[in-house]
Image (tube, rainbow, N blue to C red; front, side, top):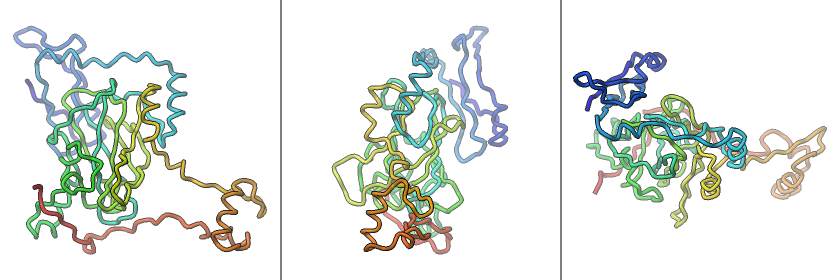
Length: 328
């Protein structure tokens, strides 16, 4: 095989890197006629972005799958999925990046239980722990944890160990969080993959530390931007996986519809014109009963409907210490 490092000056200029490569050995072409795609560099050096190409018969499988769906059919199917984001159909690439933008209330830590990526055929994509890189990697980077010897077991390799519906710290990932700084998890492949769906399990040991807002990029292009629901506070036998769907396959939609989460499903709207409720009367009556028949004029005052808490800026000097011994 041959290992390449693509152009990596900065995130914007990585577009100057090589896209397609043809390889000859002693004057004989050993790559497909269409060539092979080189993975785009990340624009940083948080991990070794070298791309290894193995010169074997598998190179012929790099061709993208044929798409037979019609545009109108795709639009109708994606409309039925009711997702936060309007995703592309079957995104394809070699680097998947999960950007975790906020938590469910914890100002100091953020984490996930795990995730799974599925190919265009619906098969689970095998991911080796060495392919997963988190920035920051884990709470083992904190000075307080290092002073105690480090070795916290909640490391990035747990994200792909296949044990996701769990509250066991041996199978989850946790990292420091600071408001305004995006935590990222990269999954790096040496061959292009076509994605039909991604399943994510939020952090369950302390649910408020779970990711709230998330963005998924494939080779630098945004494929999904939405929200993750909070993991259940108590252990349950029901899976709490959340599905991000990138395929308009009707059968797949039917199976995964119950796992698709949209924050808009939980929004409650009251339309008021000159103190007259035009829409949302049932919600208004429920709110008034809860408040003990409070006059409508008072019910409509600012602050009558509490908003979810917004985490404050996490200062490292006030970060509470959390540490769990290493793997058994």
